[in-house]
Figure 1 (cartoon, each protein chain N blue to C red):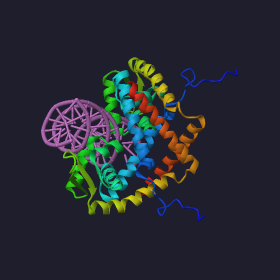
Figure 2: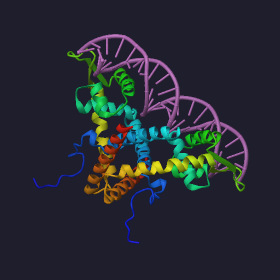
Figure 3: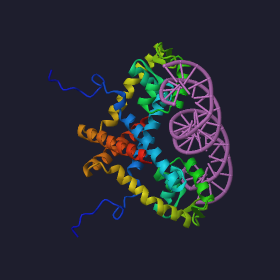
Length: 159
Length: 159
DNA sequence: TATTGTTATACTCTATAACTATA
DNA sequence: TATAGTTATAGAGTATAACAATA
């Protein structure tokens, strides 16, 4: 009777709706819809376009390959969106003198203006999302996300 | 010097990559890819197909409208996938005697067999994901997700 | 009038891979 | 051989809305 319950399949009756992945997926869908709506209203751009502008703006000078690596945005998706952003004058691309394959990306004045205008509102959104959490809860949350991501990464490798 | 820093735009230098939404989005992409790969290998089905089978299996008897409401799956997406699942013999649909518009969904023997075989592996995955977390971390994580979701919901209403 | 459920449309994102040009 | 970047294709999910049948 006093045997400790093990956290395994014998005793696991977790309902579907308490699955961690279910909770993440539901929250992510809502966050993404919110971001899409905000960015459309604020600047008439998509989430992916904003992510690329934000990446270029925050790194200053970088190549596509570097940004794809740090962002985990699909490289095909990145390339297609970047093309549109260059065409619309938000991003400048110039050949890297050292490596003829690479192009160095930077924000044009128009892109910089958009970045400067939108970033504070995105920062405010981040603060709003955290507004109900204590500092400790934020710390634990970020650490938990790290740990879970590490498990996914490691199990991805084995298969 | 001892003035407390306020958590507002004056002092907010959070780098993009520490944005909560960025962390969620990156983790969710990895979780979804993992789930898609597992379900394809285990049963040859997509994540949405599994979600519907799991919903039908765990509720026993329910209508599409009820499952759409609790799952937050898009109702068009639900309808299209359900059609395929009925065609392939995983789900049975019978007219509700009381409401001629509604159909009551249940798993066929084939669907039940798939559910019984796949669910334990999905439960194991949930345990694996949590394996690096203490009980307290899991508690804080779930509470934090709830609080953030509540903020998104409330700010969605205002606009 | 509202609800159940289907269908259509268009867009976005993901996944994979072929392809070029250069290193 | 490997890397930077583009392009193509197909599959999967999202968003909106029109629609028929029933309540």
